[in-house]
Length: 353
Image (tube, one colour):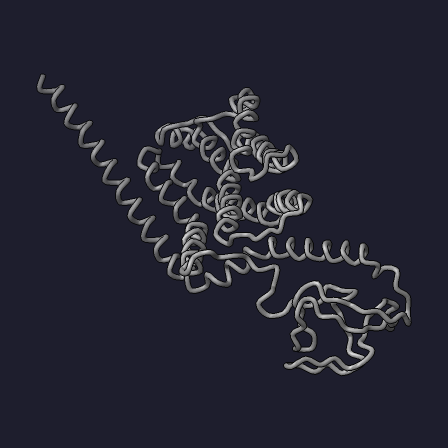
């Protein structure tokens, strides 16, 4: 009875030690994220502008397509060099620093530029109570994209709350801090499980950190450059075809793109986890190969969760790279995996050689 009681107390102490270790790792992780948060908050406006580039590009493309379609329907494509015509501005524009209100009509003339394209120039001076435009002034908005007047930039995102910008920058800083802290967080995970590993297995921390950081950056870059642009084209194209005027909420957009980037950054850790499990002998290539059908089903489910659209093309854009990573993991385990041995077995094997 005494021995059993001592064993139970020993197990209880071991469990409490694990809880204390977990608490210590969580506290250190929170401190790291907090430090990174304050640094990222200082640059949060620049980080957000970088994240907003893909959506602003798509909005400008949509505006340009609408303008081209509108010009084609209004007969601008029928004009020839030398033709004079009355042009009515469809929206507020800025030309030479002068604001031209929507609905303003100006007599213009089609001329040929040195690079052999049609351009529109004013036939006579135009005056209102605030501005003067001399004759023979180029009107780039007629045949080109032009420049929206201040306050009417259609590629800007919408914020609906008074303190929305501050909240938005807080979110940007927090998500970015988590991303930058990934190497340290991986180390904390390793430090928590390391006591249960043999001494020679603890040497795998460096390659695991390098692989984890590399694949996280690769996954986030893939999301920013490939996955999100496809989703963006589909979602905004659907709204454009429906004739909707899209006013994109800045917070909703931030949640969407960061969900995709962080989600794929974490999913791209499949090779890192497989390397670790294979190196300490918990998985084998045969085990992973036999489970590939189940893995494909799990990957499709995960891809369906993080994919922002319901079409098969975008699902495939998310799922196919994940499947490739799974089979890459089989190769990694085949190259670097080994049966698990104790420190004594490793030492005996080294002496036998």
